[in-house]
Length: 83
Image 1 (cartoon, rainbow, N blue to C red):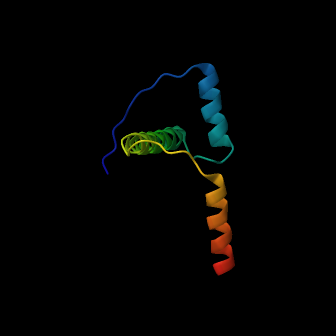
Image 2 (image 1 turned 120 degrees about the vertical axis):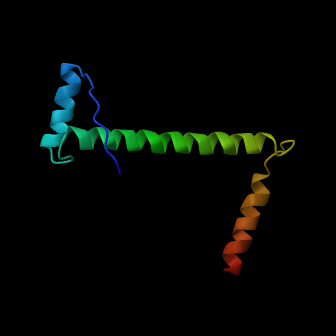
């Protein structure tokens, strides 16, 4: 994988935080920490897309019906007895 050099500017507080993460042994250097943050952000964005898709699917699935908690409990009890 090709690497690209980037220059970033951090506040003193942010720089101290990054240095603390490295000193704690979680990361070997600044670049590892920044790549970790980018991966986490990518994963969060993927989860958000999946959630939005699930919500859209639910909204387009038809008219909502009332939830019958008693029927759900009864079905659960029946499955436990059969198991």
